[in-house]
Image 1 (cartoon, helix red, strand yellow):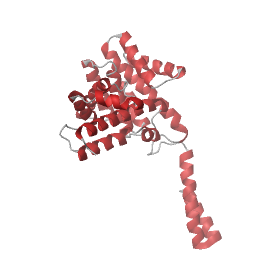
Image 2 (image 1 turned 90 degrees about the horizontal axis):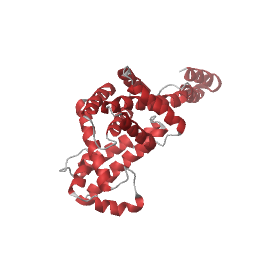
Image 3 (image 1 turned 180 degrees about the vertical axis):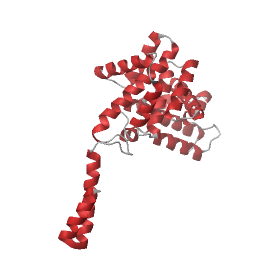
Image 4 (image 1 turned 180 degrees about the horizontal axis):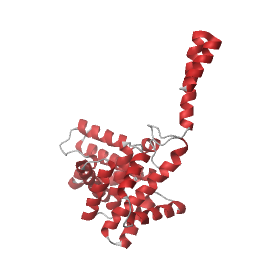
Length: 281
């Protein structure tokens, strides 16, 4: 505001009404730059000097909550294996792995403040639905890393979802989509979600079974009776929510970029398979 006031004042002083308009514009640009340099959390995501700190907090909270989730299996060796799988998918360096492992251990402690940590996630994400949804899907992916989900993990996921502001129905839908995605990846031989450009034709041929097609519909969250228009609408919505560049612009930690790419490619593969089999344009 102060930039606009000074701009109008000096513009009027030296250039009359036209100078005032020009000064107002310059003042607006000054105020805008000043807000960005103050490092506050903007509506667009992580901003200014706080960006790295908030992204780091988002990442460490993800592993701490993951520790709480995976300890429900009560099999220490398997917990570590699943956490390591997630670290490898994020391509964490040695220092980042140490920080993630420490957060994971804290999450496994008896007195871990889960609710307070989830509140911190909501604050650090600016309350953005797509970032919170990605955080929840990350936990679901960890639970499904070995292809199954323990009943106690499912119960914990409901608590996590509630803490992030999602309903039980929303969580169950995401669980169905993730379960279908796991089968779809395995049946279609997509290499755990990675796109295999040179082997695309062979992948589609293997993916053409009825069960694979059914899983593709579930990945997109639509019924098998969905028409081309409904299918495209669901596809565009999911791609808009999971597009890596958009998530990064909103504050997704760079370490999670690979997982965002996997998810968007998974959505793309499911959509292309349905279009191919059904003959949709």
